[in-house]
Length: 485
Image (cartoon, rainbow, N blue to C red; front, side, top):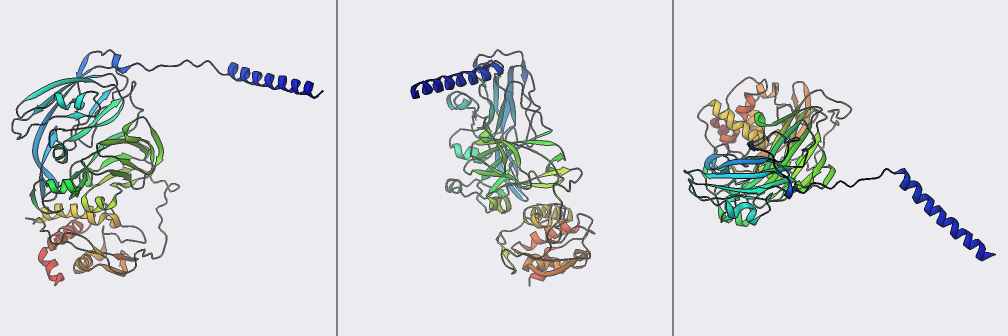
């Protein structure tokens, strides 16, 4: 009897298994495997000259176009450029900008690369494109002396965002002087459409002089070997994406950032303050991570980050190795305009006083021993002061001087500033704690003392006094020196 029951149970179980399999296989539509076309065998149609752009801009998307013969014409230019206010540097560039020109291709394109080395240049160079499958990424075929041009070709067979850089010895020195950029290989049919796209690339620079030291600065090989940069910046210089050079978007728009890291040494912890990346193409490849706060971008690597702008404001772009941002220059801005959305962000601040590091005056590390660039007139003083403000003051007082409600007082249209020039100087020299009333509202917070030179304090206060509705006046180094005594 038991054997009979066991046999019946086994038959029923087998029937159930077969029934279940038959139900699911019969209900599901037959799936046809789609094998992607082999990029190495893709035929090309026609030819065209590649559109090349300097940062922060990118060429138009490739869209649905067929694979084609794409001619990339790029010139290497050695040129003096601005590293920071009053600081110049001899950059070695692909296309005249740091980073170099953005190149946009699609899978299957045959790229005919024309690389020229300007006759006024002093050194030979070449190019290693990480998108190239071949010896040296093209470096072996592209070595070019000043006044000469080389042509080589390659087929792009892997989609993704790739770094290119000079690979002429000493390789690190060529990269450290700005010889890097990005090449994008889009898939068939192109990337999904977004509203805004921008090009952001980080690099570390090694100057003989200290950060902020004035004049034309030479490259320091020992600092590069020791991996101790004086500057870590986006798009080649301090302030390259701040103020009127900030990238822009509107509320409701989706932004895609093509992010690279030229190095040559440091890894970037890329972050946009006040935004979360809806998706990140990790290391510029196929792997997608969602809802990311900060993404690592290795030296010689990249990432593609996308997010939707939900509320207006100034969003600060940083390397979250944060002292690099506030002391070495890796700071950019995304300005978003449009209607507020109080459900997403109310803008309210909690009442009360909070001193996480105590209520005493804190001294900011800085370069008071470094001579500041002397302004020849008020216009120059304001210009120099804007740069100092963007790296020293904006975090608390905000990009437009509006301050933070119930925490940091506004500098824009400030009645306190209007009537307290000496007090404004003292606050920078010695710091400020305790209550202060500005435009009828009370604030009780702590401001650290700033170790800025007399010239720098005069410059930044002159910028403040001539911005955001304040009645223009000039603060001079002599006025600061008097208060310092």
